[in-house]
Amino acid sequence: MDSAAVTGSELCEAPPSRSVVIDVFWHEGMLKHDPGKGVFDTGTDPGFLDVLEKHPENSDRIRNMISILKRGPISPFISWHLGRPALISELLSFHSQEYINKLVEADRNGQNIICDGTFLNPGSWDAALLAAGTTLSAMRHILDGNGKLSYALVRPPGHHAQPNQADGYCFLNNAGLAVNLALSSGCSKVAVIDIDVHYGNGTAEGFYHSNKVLTISLHMNHGSWGPSHPQSGTVDELGEGEGFGYNLNIPLPNGTGDNGYDCAMKELVVPAIDKFKPDMMVLVVGQDSSAFDPNGRQCLTMDGYREIGRTVLDLAKKHGNGRLLIIQEGGYHVTYSAYCLHAVLEESRERERRGPPKLRKKRRGTEDLYTTHMKEWQIFRGAQIPLRPNKYFTRPAAKGVPAHPSPVIGPFSY
Image (cartoon, rainbow, N blue to C red; front, side, top):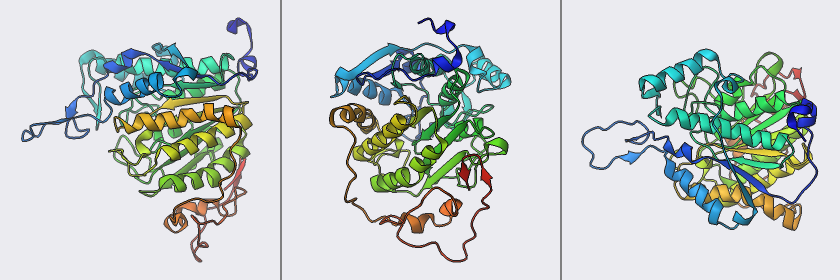
């Protein structure tokens, strides 16, 4: 069918069921982005070190992701697709013309430092355009009914990029562009689940006033880190105007681990998605929440990522007939990040083989997340979203801790 001849709603209509194939979108031109060397991500040479390290967001991490998908256990079930650069006009669905002009000018003039840790070197702008365009192609593949599960293997990452500001290694917000493409193609509501270790502030900012996009971010409780990242990622950043109640932040303490993430997914994310009822889902995945990542301290293992993949796939099947776009973000341990990526993606194939999982009778671990999060979780008090006590939330709320106001906005009662 000629996609130009159908309406937006028809483009967004879910395709018939087919055997699970993971459509991976990639372009080798993204390897040309080189953020340089220095002390961690500063790009500086203090002059008294013989060996400088590569910037965390270097191409080696992505090369291993490519290789594990080409030679790992799920390789027979992967279909590879060539990415493309985004047009400048496509970028304006999320970013302002003024901001894009600044990036184009910076690339033309050889401006190196865009903000702390974020470097636009020769080849970087072309790579950023490829990352944006490749993500759009992955979303379009789903919208056109050519597949249900697409993975945009892209760099530089994008979820920190705000409509008018680069931030945290990110220039263009790949997820934000894909969401707007889905909305303009007839989807009425899109849910974004971001499990990168850092707050997906750029995506949240882009849809902060929208009730058509539910942005959920599970992240290390790191707060703001400067002028390029003014958002704190705390639970009181709820959205504004029509978007009030459609931004759900889940800040997690260092060392939360597999069981803590599983609890947050099952107790908070799943009920929120079920209430929102999206017709398209986007998973923003970063492996920097892993146990070995130099940029995070969350202690997720392959098992944790696998369980997250299982939960999100269940949600996608429930809301949208299994359609899910996965977008690559952080993940800076050169080898383990690739394994954690494989764990997320392999669940789609395992699910087809064995059917829905049985509920686990026992979870290991004794993290008392309720105590740690007592004040943060007050936003859910009085809400229709259940927060049941279990071994991770073992203590009742402390008396005298004030709850947030609970106006009924949109689908949520906060």
